[in-house]
Length: 560
Image 1 (cartoon, rainbow, N blue to C red):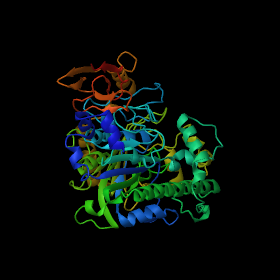
Image 2 (image 1 turned 45 degrees about the vertical axis):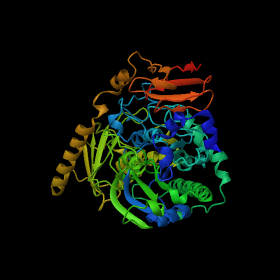
Image 3 (image 1 turned 90 degrees about the vertical axis):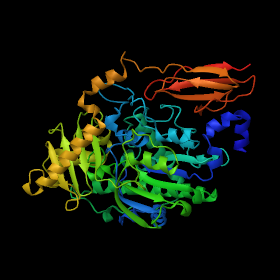
Image 4 (image 1 turned 135 degrees about the vertical axis):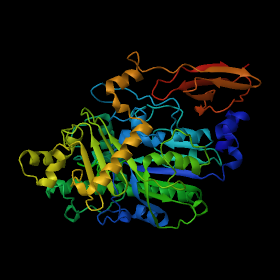
């Protein structure tokens, strides 16, 4: 068994270091946690009232779990949002706010978060959890794909994460993050009809060509049945692209069903908290990259095993509290019984005090500089723009692969869009205030209406207080920020750790800002949390990494 193989490699204290102090005795009581994260998708599922969506597996999950109706990303685009989620800190406070660090006018760089920042899966790993993810990272202190980030976060990273919990030691709790590429914006591109704009697009197009046919035949979306928002013209192109988005959602739903079936097969449903959500809103024009609700609002369903269900929660419950994706870190750490670091910005969305506000930011998008900040209270949304002349519907090479995007711009240029449809192509101004209850499509700016002056002032103050509290790295030009990350024009290299053998154990030290990994002989790398016992005659290797820096050289100690 897996535990037996680990014991032969990591005897005594090493095994305890892997599992965390006291983890071996407590592992059966700690929940497994599985986060299923769709890409580029708003609440377009049946359980959220969308009659067009074909999502039977998610609808069933909602009937058995809790549906959160007011969940928001911290950015309308993937990399900044994923950075905030994984660190539990707003992207504007960690240098991860620009989309993205691996591409832009300054070339590729890695963000370097504050020294104390740690991805919450690494904190779970340090406490004895087996952690795994697939090929999508995109943390900004990593590249987009597996193998480009700190090696200390995951036990298993890259490749197929389907049922990767089967790699863990016997009785060891697991945390998994599984991403669903099927719903990504690139899936709306005419399939394989446009030469890839980037490696990410190539990967997603390859996924459509190779993986999608593995799904059973699913009902095709009838473009005529789609209810169009008022900011889209009613054209065949718009309807066709939106139908493709719905078809991709159906594929993702099927994949979710397969993972849930594997959990059931392994008798893990009664010990696993399953959370399904999305990294930000729809991968469609006037949604992705924007601070409108179409870009920020995401669905979230939490499925609770009966023994772990919070008091007062029943199957099919609907939760109206405000939730931010930055809240995942403190919530999941607390559910796992792990201390929550004080520097985290989120709050526990299960047992914590309800939020009054959610916050979001938009910064550079590819080669287009912008800076917007937003605050919402569930009804009113306030957006402040530092580039008031920068329209959202600007040319963007990646987004312009979408047929409907090119059509929308052509219709705007020819004067064939109405007022609601033109708005996104025109300067937004410095301040916008929307009543999202009365105006869910955020088309009517109330910032100049005296009747809403009190709400405007209240949200202005809330935004100002947030910026002071968390800090905003966009107060400086991106070039100055990058110069701080790369003081010699190169990505810094983490100093090598020190490895010593004393008192019968191996002790490894490195600067406090670095995380340490080790391995015995050629075994997989483990996260170092305590002195390691190793058999005489074996070799112990170690290396260190600070987030955003290159990992250190490997240091190897041969035991006598």
